[in-house]
Image (cartoon, rainbow, N blue to C red; front, side):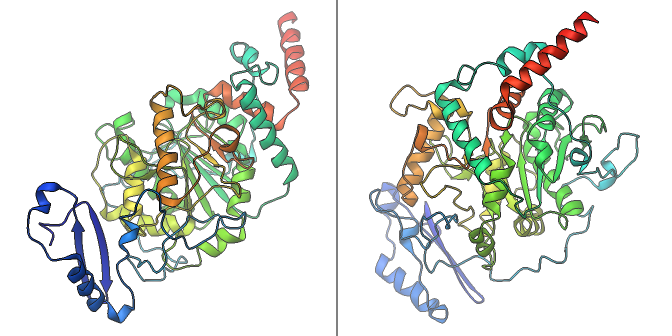
Amino acid sequence: FEHILKDYYCLVSCRQVSMMTMITRSKKRRKKRCPSIAVFVLLVLTTCSALYTSCNFSTFIMPPHQPPQLRSNTTAEAHGRKTYPEEEQKQDVIMDISTKSIEAGSHINIPPPESRIGPNGEKGYIHNAKFLLENPKPLVLSDLERESICAAPGEGDETPLGYAALENIRNHIEESKGKHDVELFCAIYTYSGGLNHTNAASETWAKRCDGVLYASDNSNLETGHVHLPSSSPSEFGYEGMIQRTRTILAYLYDNFLDDYEFFHISGEDVFVIVENLKEFLATDFVKEYEKVPNQYIFAGFPMKHQYYKNDFLCGGPGYTMSRKMLKAFVEGPLQTCQTKREGPNEDIMVSECAKLLNENYFIDTRDSKGAHRYHPLSVQKHANFAPNGKLDFDAKVVHQSLQWMNKTFGFPAVYKDDYISNSSVVFHKTPAAAMRRLEVLLYMDRNEVCNDMETSRLESIIK
């Protein structure tokens, strides 16, 4: 069958029996003789009778107007990604998350611990992940950024529509105040040239994380950067992103798996609304979701567009893994899946390897109204999104992804006010000045902050 059938597949596991077949729509292949679909289905049903299940072709072949039957509802309590009923998992073992099976230094194609050099030249350096909690950084407004950061609400880069969305988010934060019982680690890949971004993150959102890592090309106690080399010949360059991400995941597993419940991995140009992320992760549904064997919390913005054949979680805003997911991923796919792959598309690599754990690999992170929480673009870009207008590359792939989610899962394609959730957790494409601007608009009194800092600046000039 494998030489005849292509494009779509169904993996059926019956104790020791594993059969993989594929179905093609290619006109050339259609001319070749192959068993009828009826005979094929009968064969599958017979082989799998011990499991009382069958291959669900609607999972892979479905008309555009008919999304698959979904197992969970779309209410506020049901944040999980909608999955297909009676769908078989690739693995059936309940994982013991209390013990590790991979020792530090034994990961495939990842440098040993002694390759990490500390700020004083020490080998095997492990940083203090709570450095920002212990020494929080105050907000700093430079003369170059002051005008953009202190602009009147709606008159900054966020635009009036973006400010309206931020006001809704601020109101949600204030209304849902309270300690969410979740330990969150925020891992950011960067390099020594990204200090303005990581400094801005330290002054704003990163200090609200319970643990922080700035994976970099050197270790510096003042900036918080940690030397974390990978096996990539591109080293810390853009083409080395896949191997750098593999190294980050192994480092988190080796040193922090037992201390944190969730791990958010992203680049340096994001603004994470930590309270909202913790609120989402603390929901009963998220807790119940992971009690199911072989079901893992892997959260982000699902993307599928014309430039790549498969869907994946977009790396722009980052993605969030539970402890259970990180453990399963590092002990499984990290050691076997695309271990020597090079390139910048770490999100595609992580997503494709995550599918080895479960084909339904991500959880639905939308709110009860169908608005999204993880944002691949800036707040102003999403707030002013016009799907019928001329779209640049970034807007096009987001638009196509929303259409794909609608066609595949029945998620309504929403834009502008309907797109940005009041409980949003992260915005991508956020430069350093914009991080400080969002900090002021979401958490501070703009007039007080900007007037006090202006007074201090003038006093320093006079002196």
